[in-house]
Length: 94
Image (cartoon, rainbow, N blue to C red; front, side, top):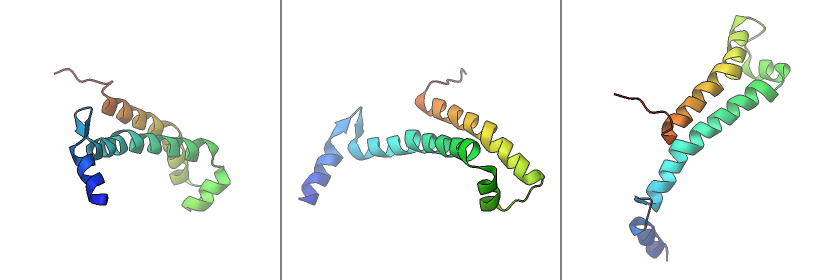
């Protein structure tokens, strides 16, 4: 039974891709950037200062301040740009 389902998935195409290729592309190009953006938003906006200080162990110095600014503002914007680039919204003209 597994051999039949595997052979059907290898030969079936959807959007000019096999089922396994489509799942791989969906996971790599859409779910990973989206998950990274959501984790960065959660860690920067909803995780309390005490919890993040405790988990990171950076102390109250400049390293923690840089991490907090980066995870709150720079990382989500950068990951949104990656996501838009993968979707083909951002095009570079030659």
